[in-house]
Image 1 (cartoon, rainbow, N blue to C red):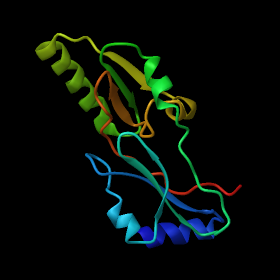
Image 2 (tube, rainbow, N blue to C red; image 1 turned 90 degrees about the horizontal axis):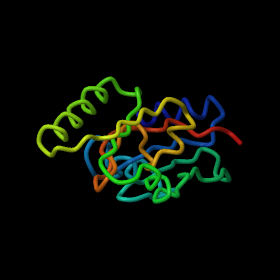
Image 3 (cartoon, one colour; image 1 turned 30 degrees about the horizontal axis):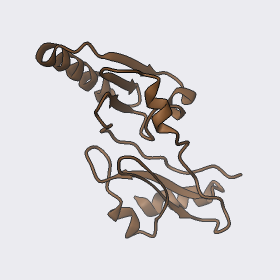
Image 4 (spheres, rainbow, N blue to C red; image 1 turned 60 degrees about the vertical axis):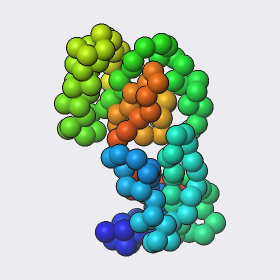
Length: 150
């Protein structure tokens, strides 16, 4: 599957293939990609890696937007659940987390929906499908197929 993705990226004139990896729940770990020639282009807390396998050797590395502390601070104190409609399971999981927070911990979470590409790019985590703030780190999955030609 990785080789097919690389072939597709080459046919489309892309610079290479990038993927978000994490050694935690929901995302693939980096070992599979490293074994297939991917290298680390960027990292983000707590343990995200943006891995890349270039097709065009001189292409710039993709990167994270960063500034996560500032982005997370805008949500203030308390539990915030950040979600997008990218995965059909997220609505169910977000509702379960909110219900458990209310019933078992007497917390009323702030639920934030990411509705646009801009929202996702400015999320307080490089993984913008689903995350929680307020002492919790995000746990979810995503992969970026190919970065565009500059």
